[in-house]
Length: 323
Image: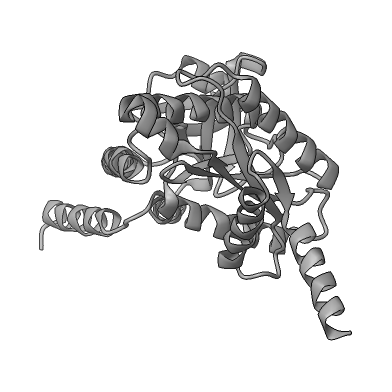
């Protein structure tokens, strides 16, 4: 088989492999693995880039697959911030401190912005291959992002929560001796939302959900993960916070919602939360937060309940019944 035909066949095979991935996480892992295999490439790192007026160059970065440190920085941070501020997307060959780099910058239709940084130099032949891979990757990221986000609020959806939670648990299992503080699963439910829809109509209800989402984005950090679980229920994975810091962050958000002027008037939120223990199976964390949320609603709504308090009360009741 002639060389050019082999190249075309190889390109189709690579394309088919990438197109088979159904999530952003698995796709990005596959692309990183492929790019790392190229001759001349010493390192491949992937990042998510957030607009942040309070940071240098107006951006904050989070390393993929996961960075839970709010002040994260690695050896590529200085270069990445400089390059991203000038990039309009696509591929860019760069030289920084006598080292060659190739930046793959996905800016189209995705939030946060996605970037892959290759350290090293590829041949002209492999450069064409990288350009083709980038085209597939950029299109797939945009497509998967639209599927993994709630269309009304723009937040990641329930399916994405499962992948993200698993990554958080794995991260803590791998970093138990580090200084990273715990993560927390927080379940939030807008109180009496059905009454809002019945009284003002579903358009007003949708506006409440959008304003509620905006408050979540305002009050939590780019290193926290926000989701719309369904209906009027939302989830936050709050990262790198000790128990007092976690409760303070939840209380700030709770108060912000209570004081906010929603289109339908005052709105309150019931909140249940639990620590994400790396030993506990990931699926149980949401069940625990949801049980704490149920207690908040059962006891009158507009409350914050820690799952530990629920289990403590339950154990106390069991002790009383035994004797």
